[in-house]
Length: 612
Image 1 (cartoon, one colour):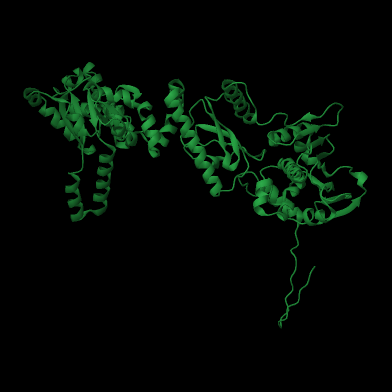
Image 2: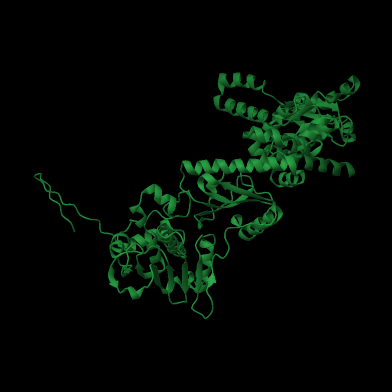
């Protein structure tokens, strides 16, 4: 342990850290790596980096990687640059140092996958000993070097005759522990090799020790790198690859190509809608090696209608090499890929209405979220987007042709309250209660300047309901007074009008904002009391009130307004209020639920008494 003495009066001693390798491996297995299976990825990565360095000194060499697993050992052999004895002492026996760090960092990032020098430790997740035999291609006539590292932190190094490894390169051999069989069986090793290395640019083969030729792990280059006879054949091949990777037939595939960062790949458009806000993971490869299957950060949040598989040269992995490092490069890539998705939507809108229609049918919510913040998409797609209206589900373009003045509600329940009556009155109302819809409808004049958009309020609707004649109003005045008294507890006024459809006995006109204001005023008055309570009570009278509008065209209402028995009049008014409240489909307050039950039972009791 090195000692250094200082010239001051109190000599200080510098000591090296003592590393408990078993504790470090446990830390890696529980906090850095998601699964012991990454050991094979790390071995493949080291082999690929060694081949990259070998190609730098022998550009035209024919080099590859060979995997072997027979149930007793797992072996990874490469034709890479290899290690000298000094390299072994420096890089394999020093935790945290990488052979790539000997180069400039910028060059390292351009040429190598790994950057952290701890990948070999992942092998201790499945084995207690790592056996490495390597021979350097940089030094002519270099001997072979053997390194054995053990999980207790000890290691041995010795040189071997050149015949122990005739060609430059490295062989890593693991003898799996009994509890690691899940990850080291021959079939599993092949599966993991294909999972992580299917897009590697160097040839990788696998053998399980049985007679016969080795199995290619990555026999085909990336599908976007292959030549196809026609654009249609290319499109079908990319769609088939997307289906193989993601398990669904894409609605369409979007080719992704960002030469500045060496990124290529495809985005597969999901054929079905996904819940709002749910983000799918994307498959990201770095220099051919699979980095992550769940890289949400590669695309913006609104792009949840696609799943991507990409291979990039310049994206930076995190220490675990299972996600991407959030930096300026990743932000620029995210923006550029978002622009590719916008361009695809634009092409579909301009040249393939049938595809656009199928896309919008499944993903209108995603497009609406994009249109809110993207003026180009708004201008292009707003006329095509479906909305719920009093004419049914239709596009705003269709709706605005029939209704020059477009009214929009602030909530779904408000739309449910007024839809039937507004439609009968010839009003054009759009349900603005869904996410983004109200904001988008208000932007319709940007696309159709001749259209007028306004929020629907109770006064607009009641102005289209016809008043009854004076005689009818006077004849019903006693009943209306009883009804108002019965419903005063709900801050609800009662009026008599005529409107269609005649099958609707009553309409409850009330807004969420008005209910909130009344509730707030009520709570404030109860808490203040005294003089302030009286003042607040007076102000409360000015808060917007609900209105139960009875339909004189409805036979039930015409009968009800003739009731001269006070209790029965009150009960019938409560029942009409309860029915109208349920039709509004808003949540019922406890007092309203109680009123509905009580009025039903009272009416039933009255009917039974009458029959008896």
